[in-house]
Length: 217
Image 1 (cartoon, one colour):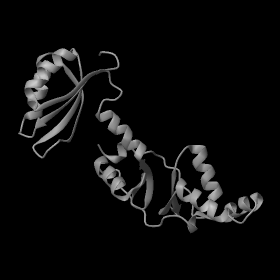
Image 2 (cartoon, one colour; image 1 turned 90 degrees about the vertical axis):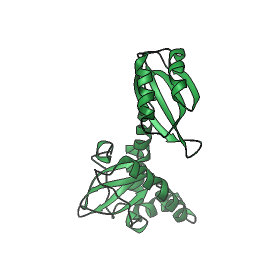
Image 3 (cartoon, rainbow, N blue to C red; image 1 turned 180 degrees about the vertical axis):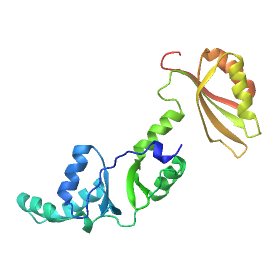
Image 4 (cartoon, rainbow, N blue to C red; image 1 turned 45 degrees about the vertical axis):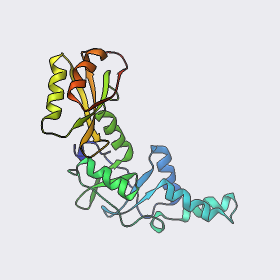
């Protein structure tokens, strides 16, 4: 899946001249935690709610409430924004986006087309995709197992499930307990837990867990 399919667009942006107070107001009204900063149609920085809130107390330490408001109205995001912005394009694979977020400890990345900001992809968007991969909103039988890495292993497992009338609604693979295996998690409909366990067990290294999720389907 590519970023363009999951990014939020059109994206809300601000200018470098936007005050810290206005930037915070926009975030709170729109329920967002970061804003790309754009000047003359070009991305020049990004600010997060954390950055804005961190700047606010440093200003407020020696001021009264009226002076604080005035100071926040005068302070522009240009003075505190992050200027070196990590970006991706619409055709960036989502796994690359997730890797960039994890490696750089950031919660959102602007999506650009040339110099233009066309969207933003956040950790919430990635989390929603993760839920889809695991079929979190699907009813059925959830089964997790370790399988070998020989060619055709997943195909054999899928055939065993199909042979008993099972329908695989979701499938995800993860690192196993050793280099010789991987963990696979499936959501299956159309069979009972007992039928699925009997079909799966001969085709896996180890059956880790099997349970019904929500209602049957």
